[in-house]
Image 1 (cartoon, rainbow, N blue to C red):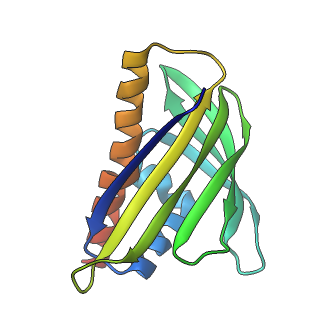
Image 2 (image 1 turned 90 degrees about the vertical axis):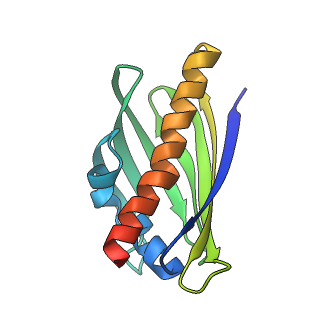
Length: 148
């Protein structure tokens, strides 16, 4: 059974600035500390990554997975798992729209994950917390430092 988490934040930058950081996959290890390597495998005719392989630290060892990206909606960056060594599902999205205050972006992050091997609930919750921290807080810090 998969687990789904969803969180929101506001970033002091435009949606285009947020999207730009999210599309710069090779730079993810600079601001996402659990990611050890990122490789763009395929891109569309506009140069946007459509298939990306990640190597991450997970559960005291290295894990690898490949995500396929959907760029059909300019306010959403969505992905689905296409290959994973310990994951059965790792699907999610970022949605970024103009915030309530000028020059801000409201960001929603959702992730649905299912691992091949079961893990205890307390480890799962701790891992979800780390993923959400990186997905939103580290993203926010990265975007705002680049925008400022």
